[in-house]
Structures are given as C-alpha cells and as structure tokens.
Length: 516
Ligand code: ARE
Ligand code: CA
Image 1 (spheres, rainbow, N blue to C red):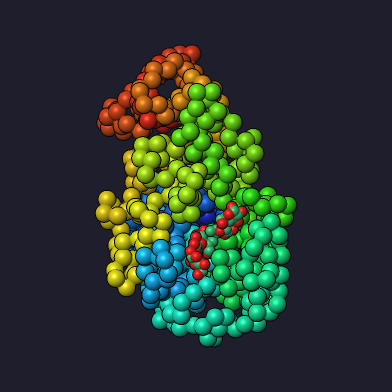
Image 2: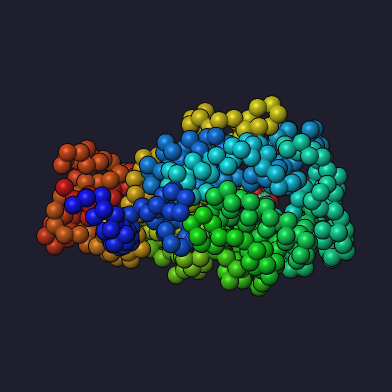
C-alpha cells in the first residue's frame, strides 16, 4: 500500500479534527492562538477587549518594535499604545514669556496631515513596528488625533507646510467649525466647558476644530484610521473625544474596517470627567469605552493621601470600580496615570516620581483587575513642556532605560503581576482582608491570592487565601526553579489560612499554578 495515498485520503479529516481539538483546548486554557496573518493573539482573542496594555508614550517606532520582541511579548503584555503617529506641527521658534522648549511633547497633538512621518519615525518604520509587535503577540493601539488640526506654526515633521485652516490636498476653511460660523463663542475658542455647542464646535486651546459632522471630513478621518488598520493596528484612543458629539464618533466608527483579527477596532474615548449631562463620560459609553480618569484619582488618594481617619488609606480601595462610582469595568481603560495626569499641577495623580508607591499602585490595579489595565511608561521630565530625549531637530531618539526613559513597565514586580492578572482572569475578588490602614489582601476566586502593603514597615498577616493547603511560590519575589522557589514560600494550611510577611511597599502573590 502506498502510504502517501493513505495520508492523502485521510488528511482532510485529520486536519479538521486536529484544528477543532486545538481550538477547543486553546479556548479552555486561554492559550495563545495564531491569527489570520500568523501573529499570535493573547488573552481576549475573539473580542476587541485589549487585556493588559502598556502605553509606551512617545517611544520612537524602532524602540517600540524592539521592546515588543524583547520584553512585552515575553512578559505577557497583550498590547501597546503608541503616541499619535500622524504628521504634526514642528515648531521653528520659541513663543513668548515662559516658553523655553522648542519641541515640547505636545507637538504631536497638532495634526498637519495623515502621512505617517512623525517625531517617532517614518511611515515605513511605523509599519514595521506594528508587524513586529503583532508577531511578538502584542497588539498595537494608536492615539488618534481627529478632532482638530493645529493651533500654531506653519511647518511639520513630514515637511508639509500650512497656513491657518488650509492644509493642501486635505482640508480647507469649509472643513472647520469656526470659519463656517458654527462655533458660538466670541473668539472661536471654548470659553465655557459646560456648554456642549462650544465644547463640540469651538477650538480647544486654539486647535482648529474639524467639522466632524461632515461627510468629507469623516471620509478623510476614516481613510486615515483605515490605513492604520490595514497596517495591523487593533484600535484607538480617541484624543479629545469629548469635543466631538457621539453621533460624529459613531459615524466615523461605522466607516472603519475590521482589524487583522477580524473584529471591529477597539475604540476608547478620552472624555474627561467634569462636564455636565451629555458631556459626561457616561454619556459616551454607548459609543465606546472611556478612559478611567476618576479611578486614577481615587488610586492617588488611596496610595498617597494617607490620613489618620483612613479616608485615604489603601484599605479604602475595598470599594473600587463601579461600586465606587466609576464607569463599568468592561467599558473602561484603567490606569495609574497618563501623559496629561502625570503633569497635573495639583498633584491629583501618581507619577513615576512617586517611586515605589507608583510601582505598587500599578501592581494593585493589576491585582484588582478593574477595567482593562494600562501601564504607563514614558520619559522623565523636569518642566511640564519638556521634550522627550530627542535630536536638535525634534526627532525622538531610541529609548534607553535609565537614560531619560523610566521603563517602569519592565519592573519585575509589575511584570509578575501582569502574569498574575492573566492567570486569575475574571475570577471574583473574595476573602478581602485589611488592617484598616495600608495593608490589603484578597483572593481571586480560587485561582490566586495577593497581599499588598503600602506601609513603610513589613507587616505579618494571617489570612484566608482561598487556596488548597500546600506550599506556594510567591511570583513577585521569586520564580519556580527545578521544583524549588527562588523567592518567598507561602505555606497554606489545610483550612486555607496562611501567615505571611508582606514587605514594606511590597506585594506577595501566588496562584494555583505556583504551587510547589
Ligand atoms: C498647545 C499649547 C497651548 C496652545 C495650543 C495650540 O500648550 O497653549 O494654545 O498648543 O497652539 C496637548 C497639551 C496642550 C497643547 C495641545 C496641542 O496638553 O497644552 O496645546 O496638546 O499641542 C481638555 C480636553 C481634553 C484634553 C485636555 C488637555 O477635554 O481632551 O483639555 N486632552 C487631550 C490630550 C492632550 C492634548 C489634547 C487633548 C489636544 O490628552 O495632551 O493637549 O490634542 C477639565 C475639563 C476637561 C479639560 C480639562 C483640562 O477637566 O472637564 O475637558 O480637558 O479641564 O483643561
Ligand atoms: Ca470638535
């Protein structure tokens, strides 16, 4: 008998069952599954939910690509959010008074054209970065500046020149609200942040506001976003979404193609809290997910503003998420800070300058699991406008950890909690314990247990872990090696209780899988 003929006849059947079996196994174990273009998707494979992402804000494309392969993929990050990639304002002179930074970070929020030559690199480098990241199992999310163009200057990183309301081959005065007489304020700017007609139709800090309700403008914007989708991008952070009515956002979204994973792109809207009625984040939930700014503020209060009456202690986070008045978990990108809030004058948010507390807050967010957690990692700064490390012409140089770049996403304690978050999945938070001050401990279903200490001294706790008796390796301080554990071993008794010392500003975390 000719063996090749047998194989030939039987192959289709074998292939089908093998594929089915692998798919079923992968689904039940939440394993990585290859997608259409050969890339591997983790976590939320069949939906748009982004899982755990990191914002490598203003990292250049070459560095993001390298990081995807060397760090993000292996560490289990599901995605990376990158800074606005479209061509932007390039300043040629300083403004007046306190203006001392020629190339402030915010140049990239002034869109000149939808070519992808930017401070972060060329269109070819961007394309290659997305491909490299997808190959490493990391999806790419783009900060989309679509509400406006520029508010100053006349030249750009892509070399395109412009004058007010005139962008050759792209937009003319008829494509903007103010020149079309559709902004009801005396100077064309937003004077009242509570008046929706102004918030939607006037110029935010002088940025020329696009007529996003018009067919032509929607077509240009959708063309831009669809190009990014074609390159492999999985979704967007919509900058200044509060400045566009939900119906305009919906119209643009309806023009977007499916991603390489066969789903509609993820759509998270920057709608800052503070506005009334239709301007509230809640009013935009029908159109997309929103950024969890209020949650970031609550975390700052819990981690930093420790008060004697415990109103601002870590224990206060027993109530967090929707129960604490935040937007629903499944509709929120959660974070400790972002590029705006880290520069907040009032100090209402944590930032990298908070050191161990900043790291611990990230670990708490990953442990709690509210929203789709996004780690924030960018460059160190002194004054608010500071440029990221760049050449004299404004082009951002390769990210080198410790040399201007914080690389907090590489912190081994954070990486450990990315893995822990991935493992415990959507299991419910149970067995919550607190000393009513700065130590909390809880289980996630019967998948894992964690304790966090925001105090300055180690603390011994005796708590219910919800885990079967046995010895477990703490994933934060150590790793399993040849049956042993290089870090702290947590011994759980037959009733599920354990006595554990939680280090100062530290975390102890175990899972069923870390049982020795
Ligand atoms: C720069 C200069 C300005 C100049 C302008 C135009 O700083 O002086 O007038 O250029 O030439 C970023 C920077 C801005 C920068 C801009 C463009 O932060 O300083 O302006 O880039 O280069 C509101 C919006 C919200 C917005 C914040 C900043 O609702 O969407 O203001 N956030 C996003 C980004 C920013 C970015 C932009 C939008 C613009 O994340 O980084 O600006 O693309 C209350 C209200 C909020 C309000 C908030 C702050 O909370 O409820 O709605 O947020 O106050 O004002
Ligand atoms: Ca607008």
